Image 1 (cartoon, rainbow, N blue to C red):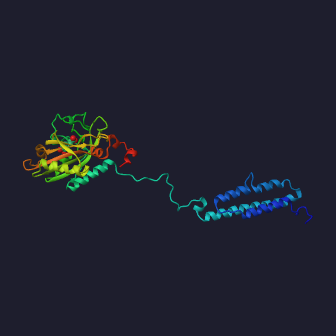
Image 2: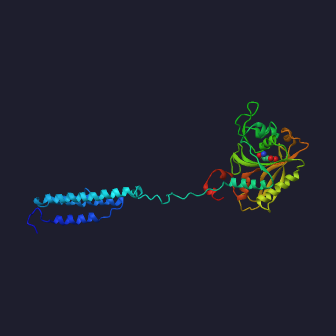
Image 3: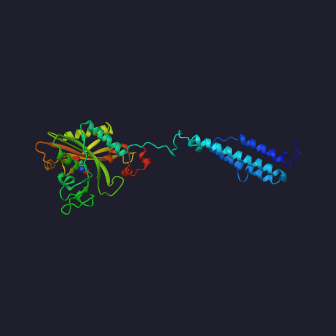
Length: 350
Ligand code: DAH
C-alpha cells in the first residue's frame, strides 16, 4: 500500500467502485428505465453520485482533489450511459420511446352496438312486402300539400271540419285569403297525384307521414303514418276491396284474425267503410275490444271526374290504414307516444 496520502485508497474509493459497477450494469432499455437511472445516480436530492460528492467534504483535504476527479469521471460515465440509451431509443422509432404499440387494437370505451330498424319502419316494410306480392307498386307524395290535393279534389265540402284551423296545420290560410297550404292531413292526396299522372289501370300503395292538430294522448299524436291504397280499373267492385283487405289482414296478423267491415263516411268514397280487428287477449293492454285500423270504400265518381277519368267506364277502391295502429296491435304496445320518444329501452325490444 502506498504511503502517499494523495494516492492512498480511501473508504470513499470503495463506494465509488461499487457505484461504478452499478452504473455499468443497470438496464437501460426504455425511456422509463433511463429516467429511473438518472434519478438513482444523478438525482439532486438522493442520487448516488450526488451523495458521494457530499461525502467528499469529510475526506482528508489532501485526498479531495483525486476523489473529485474520480467523481467527475463517474458522473460523466453515468451521463454517457443515459445519452447513448436515449440515442438508441430514438433511433428505434417513436413507438419504443413512448411505449406506443401501433399494432394493438384501438381502445373503445364501450363496444358500439349495432342499431335496429324502428318498429314503425319494420311494420311499414311488412305492409309494403305484402302489397308488393299482390302486384301493387309504391307511390310517394309531398308532406306539404295544397288545398286542391288535400281537400278539394277529394270531394271535401267547404265546411268540412278537417278544413278548420283547429284540426289542421296550415302553412298558408285557406282560400280566399291564401292558397290553403297544409301539412297533409292524410295520404289520400297521393291518390289525386297518381291519377293526374297515370291512366288506369292503377294499383298503388302510398306510405307516408301525416299531420293533425290533435290533443295528444295514448292513442293520438300530432304526427303519424298511413299507407294509402288505390286500385282503379274497369269492373272493380266492393267485393274486390273486401277480398283484398281480408287477404291482407290474414297475411299480416295471421290466419286466425277476426275482422269486420263497418259502414262509414268519407267525402272521397261511396260507399265507405271502416275495418276493425278484434283484439282478443284481454290480458294485453287494449285487449278485449275492436280496434279500427283503416278507412276504405269505392272511389267516389266525383273524384274520378276531378282528375279527368271517365267514371262511367272505370271504378276503383281505396283504403287508408294507420301504421301506428298496426304496430300497436302487432306488438301489444299500449301508448302511441312511445314511437316518437326514441327511448332505447323501448326500441331495443324490436
Ligand atoms: N284519408 C282517411 C283518413 O285519413 C282514411 C281513408 C278512408 C283513406 C277511406 C281512404 C279511404 O283511401 O278510401 O281518415
